[in-house]
Length: 276
Image 1: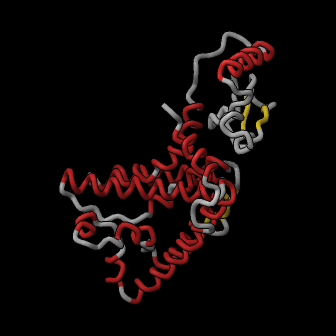
Image 2: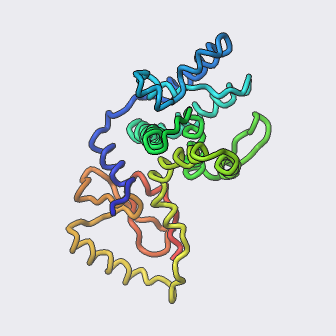
């Protein structure tokens, strides 16, 4: 089975102009605008959330407006807007516009699909917004920058990996405390994270201890033999792209990894180091 992230990388490589640049900026502005309008007329917000039953009756706009349903947290909502924008714009700058747009598009698609499945199979209408989808960006950000320090509430220093743990606890509480099938909405919201980082997480699963130290010469000879058989010279150990499929990519070997491992230009500085 192909790694989903490999398919995403291939799509983005072939469509470098895909997506809306600075998408998170527009989403944040829309969130803030609807928050202000909702303060003036709270009934307006009821026309934004996802409701499969109402969508089937012709309210098609709900397929998209649930993505800009603002969090109802009073003035603290603007702190949430700031984090939405900051994380989203940073992820887009790191991944590129196509990858970030695909990230949100996958999350949107899974959420919509789940809402319709629950409606058609169980006859249950779930009212959903995109709160958990945006909060899932914490996991992606922490996976890329685990030791980056931020100021929680602008004065409490905390590393992103611990912020992600707090976020995970919030998700877990929602799963346990909410009734079925609403409790699965947070689970669905992290599926796009698993698409992007599932391959990396699988590499963290402990393997059987090695019988001894890695023989770099034998390992390199084995890799070269496999490369000759597969008709390529370089293959990224993270995304699986090769210099045959992507002749414009640069490939390098990581000196910090144990063994002989090659990475493309997108993952040479963004991978979990091999330890055995």
